[in-house]
Amino acid sequence: MLARHGWELVPGEEDHAFDVALVLGGDGTLLRAAEALRGRGIPILGVNVGHMGFLSESDPEDLPDVLQRLTVGDYRVEDRATVSALVVGPDGREHANWALNEVTLEKTVPQRIIEVRVVVDGRPVSTFGCDGIVLATPTGSTGHAFSGGGPVVWPEVEALLMVPISAHALFARPLVVSPQTVVVVEVLDNSRTDGQVSFDGRRTVPLPAGGRLEVRHSSEPVQLVRFGDAPFADRLVHKFALPVTGWRRPLPPS
Image 1 (tube, one colour):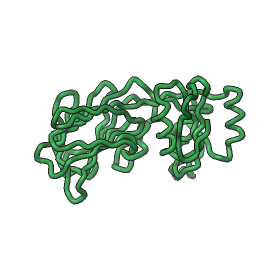
Image 2 (image 1 turned 120 degrees about the vertical axis):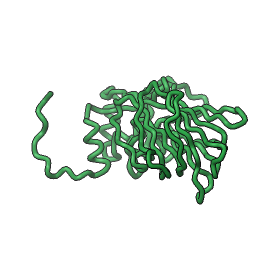
Image 3 (image 1 turned 30 degrees about the vertical axis):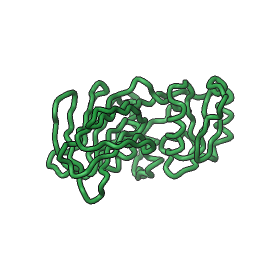
Image 4 (image 1 turned 180 degrees about the horizontal axis):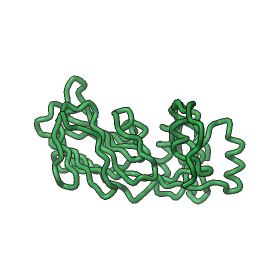
């Protein structure tokens, strides 16, 4: 299946009609494809015709070779971890969702801060005012979390990241926790603004003062097509144009 700057499953088509979903676009297009295909057993191959295309495997000029390799099955499938999220309003109403990159809690009034409490595995860690909080997967560590000062995490690392955005606190640093950890962010009753939760920047739900957001590792990954075994470090250097011109010799084999 092909898609350019968009994604749509054609009504009536059976999932088993496709071995691989070929997505033409940027990271936003691939996230939309992941939204449509997660749980269907169809891996996604991204061809970047967008800006960064960090999730994409190939560039447009490689398309003839990509199609040839797909035809003969010369590829591997990589599982990327996702997170499950539960938004619980002050009235007890619940909204469940998920994300491949990140779940983000943001303030709804620009000139005010949102007051939150962070709870990890049922234990309070800190309370502070901020512009928002990003809860990201390793895949999402190079997205919104990276812009907020969070660490870059290799995709194979099993972890969940919490990155406060513009926090008004001495101790409001990024946290990296295990995949068994449950992170809860409560919007305090005295918060100066309500919050809004977004999932991969695509789906949103309000979170008023007195509500909470629960995020945990999901058992349902998103599958991406990869060619070969290029190190993740090479992808970082290529996508961010990192300066490595002084590097001369490779590391000895382990």
